[in-house]
Image (cartoon, rainbow, N blue to C red):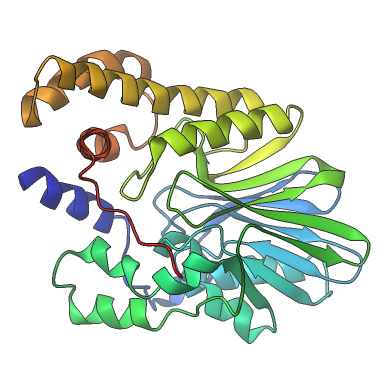
Length: 314
């Protein structure tokens, strides 16, 4: 139970009720990276409160935004950055999954006229599953925040294509991180927004994960888009080899926890045994100290068949 409480507390520490301080409008939440052909990555500034990466795609007759950060203030700054580059309407926002740090700015873009698009489970989970990040009895302010989030108004099952004039954007459901993840590909620019299916040199949040499916998804992404620029949910823009390196972390985590279980290690002893193997390769990655213990515990539960995951919407 101690590890379960620690996991929730560590993840909850990443989320905070949005600030209303005046300096929120001026502090930099992200750095913009021009990936060419009207495609931009907004890479979160560590510690800024943006929470995750986002981005946008400019087409002939409009804009698609991918994810909306952890706060309305960060989303408003992204909207301003888009307006500095185009006056075309923002037609769609794609939420790559339901976690707070990717959806909390939806309202800013909804108010600007965008439709919010996501895999159908995101609508079902956004105002419910996000409460777990604040423990069994979420504080009233956090509960109110989660329940006020703007949910998707356009959902899909396995795939949907969005068009900005003749520019085609592929939105595909892929398994692994939450059970409701979307990958957004821009074929004519060779750019892929992965959401949290790829964390570049960063340990991931595995609270909802099916890591066996996740490994398969990342292998597929690296194979299908060998020359693409990949915009991760967290970390810098990468290439296919970076996706492969992240997949190798997931594989190592699975293998090392399985080996420790086979040797009958449990709880703290299991965690220490696995960290002895993983630390030399991964302790320099971002969020290592934040997520390594939850990663190990959740992998142990996954292999034991006791891990709780969100239930897909009917």
